[in-house]
Image (cartoon, rainbow, N blue to C red; front, side, top):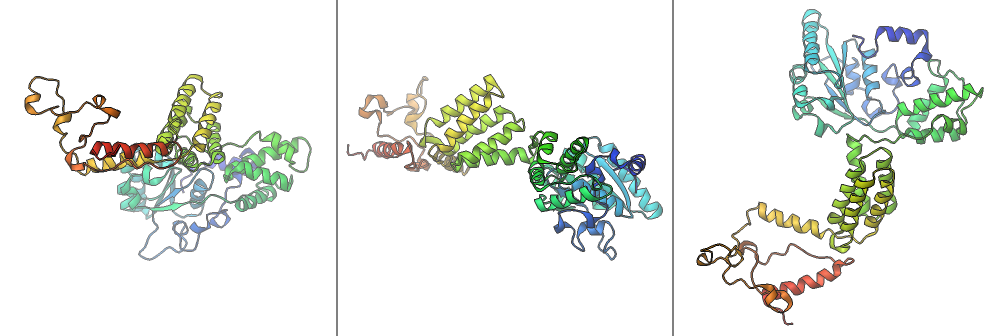
Length: 452
């Protein structure tokens, strides 16, 4: 194994002085059996078991895998365990610092190792989503020909961030969020084992509950907070990590939110869907998460403007002006005061009556246009302001609506191909009930069937 994940010097230092490494590093599992959670990936015969040589043999070799999941749930840990347990040559690269040159060097080394002394190579590539298409392309020959067995880790949705040819040549393994029971087991191990805190402090139930809340399913965050609390307790000469000590040591919970990744889109989606569902409290929760994570307030304001037309529309014609005003205010004042404006708009939109008729109407019209229903503009509607237009019949017979009672003239506006089509179907919700009455009267008058 090539010592890329942890250099020999770092390992030697850790053996001599365990406290020199963070608790989260010291408590990394050494075997697959020590892994907390992810049991659906660790059954006998699973791809990860085969990577470390369990059940190997026969014509079916180990497959390349892509590990997908949020931070702190074990992707790098699984790669580390494989690196420790496998008898294969193990190389680690990070997509943050590596490029095509480094990838090609690893592949060439793998080919020499395989040809020279029959040694297979496992390549761990962390944060593969940061690789460009060209960089990911450089992996294809090695993965396809099994010059390397790839373990790639990503926090991004692979279907969007990884090229299809590489996905098709690998097994996509989705890591599940760690449960509170998983994290509790991990913390108990960290409290008692020699490589952890070796029984130096105890963790009462109320402090453990708070710690689990802080962790938010992230094992690394849980162990980091536990270590901070233990250090504070020991500095005070206390034998347990009280809730007060833990709160002092860990000021606040870090919000799980990656502004460049899935969380960015997932939380934004949840905000809009909560507004659409008229749940103001849930909408405020997701808004708070975005604000606390440092989301661009202009992005939030843009989403609210879209929601005002997409989900509210004419049921409350004031919704869009409120969202636009909020966007203008946000651009002028910024955070922290912009949080008040965004809250104002979010509550107003969530509690407004809902109608998606503006969305469905333009969707239906676009579908017809894309299907080829885009006939000629009726001659009487064509531009008649140039010389010779009348001779072509352009604008001839056009009735100026302001010249007739009610300012609605009975004449054809749509092309023949869609004449009589109804795209806008108003609801009876909120202010749109008025439009529902108006649109029927208007359509009758346009057809010349209005009876007054």
